[in-house]
Image 1 (tube, rainbow, N blue to C red):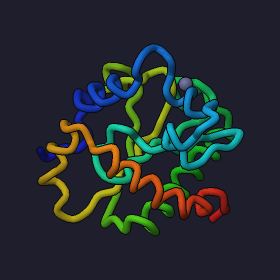
Image 2: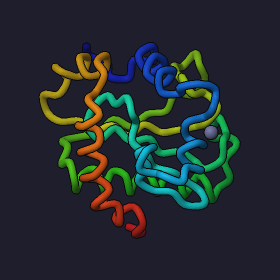
Image 3: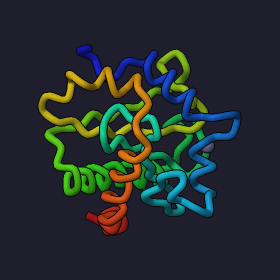
Amino acid sequence: MKILWAPWRMKYIEEAQKGGSECFICKAYRSESPEESLVLYRDENVIILMNKYPYNTGHLLVAPRRHVPSYEELTEEELCALNMAVKKSLRLLREVLKPDGFNIGVNLGRVAGAGLEDHLHIHVVPRWNGDTNFMPVIAETKVLPEALEDTYKKLLKKASLLRENP
Ligand SMILES: [Zn+2]
């Protein structure tokens, strides 16, 4: 597999993630137990959470608080907050997981591969040298919850990095 950003794969993954009709991002935003939704950060504009069906270790989703499908609907303040949240996510992942690179991507609309097309979200995926060989395997295999939990705990310990303004 040479292309990481395979839309058909994302659709499969995100449909599994939706788990019913309720938007999982809004649900995570409102959740009283953010740990269960693997939330790392929430404020009045954005939410950062782990993807439960990750391409790779540390796959994060960065989304506006508001349930909107596209960039056109965001205010300048929200756009700014969203981009700052991506920046902070990169900083957190770099510090904790020490990746060699990242993929950052957005799928707008079902035809582009968005499984959850009503709530804009940015994928931030850490990459390591040599990880391409096992990527297709982990993308199609259920990731062990323990591994996901471990990564979540590691990231949560340094989540103060998401609150500071870099
Ligand atoms: Zn939503």
